[in-house]
Length: 67
Image 1 (cartoon, helix red, strand yellow):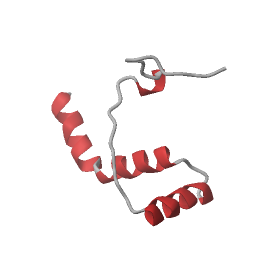
Image 2 (cartoon, rainbow, N blue to C red):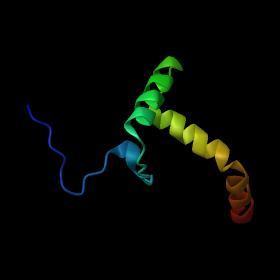
Image 3 (cartoon, one colour):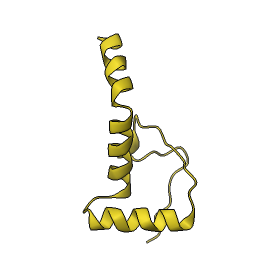
Image 4 (spheres, one colour):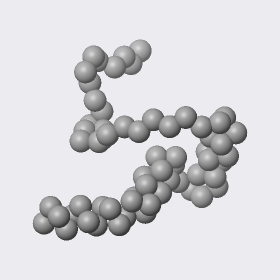
């Protein structure tokens, strides 16, 4: 049975999320993939963790401003 995405369909786990597209050298992608496997995580989790930590000061200011 073939699974085809419906036009305009967004997976429930992606609702309310924004995408980020990054171009890297193939070796960088491979090394990153291997590192995530060795660390028992996924590429998605590693990227979200890095961005969250990197942007933490800004996120804190945004939360204070919206409170």
